[in-house]
Image (cartoon, rainbow, N blue to C red):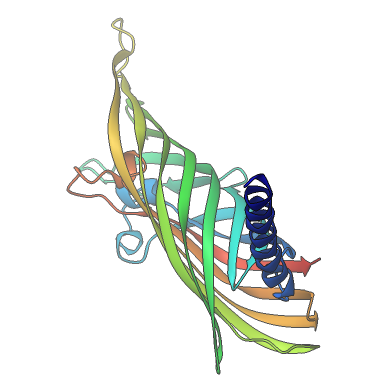
Length: 316
């Protein structure tokens, strides 16, 4: 009886070992199992200037409201993908964007002319700053088609974004010396996390040569947004009364849902099956992420960061 039990146990262990070994052998036999791909990207382009559109800092030109004003921006990203075999992968990625000092100065020296021939000098300046950092964790599934590879992916994105803008304007009457100064500041910050999903397509040779790739993804991010708004007006009409000023400040923190869409299109050059360089266009758009894109405003608009990027990927 004991011998039969021992033999049964040994048979069960052997069968389990054989099954486990076969599973490992099957994964090991998959060409891409265990392969890593490291990717870098750098971009330079445009940041939409929502404050210029809303405040009309250009001196009343209506063209900005129709076509949008632009500021400079930069962006970068790094990701590490591990192939799990059977066309499955897991990817960890980080991306960021910001801008150099975006200051625009405007001046109008031919303001309203009164009946006595008087006018005023007007000058204003406007800043538009935006920065964000994002972290992604996603699972991917690739389908190999005759025209190329299609990759479906889904995961989680975390986002932290800050935007700020300052507006300064001065107007002084030529003859009377009466002056008016206006100052306004808006700062918004958002921190949130949520699901993200997308699809990508790529073509490329097995050796050196050219290919193309494209991807689009959407995310719904849930978190807290804080808006700080300050403003003031100061008038100087002369006389013993001196300057008069009025100021106001408001701060609000609320739970918000931010929608985000990313897209890119690139031309790729494969140095080999393991390395490629890319040149293309990418865009990131955010809804309800700050004061200027708030969905409760009747004059809101999404924030867009776009431009040309270069990238490099290597597999090992």
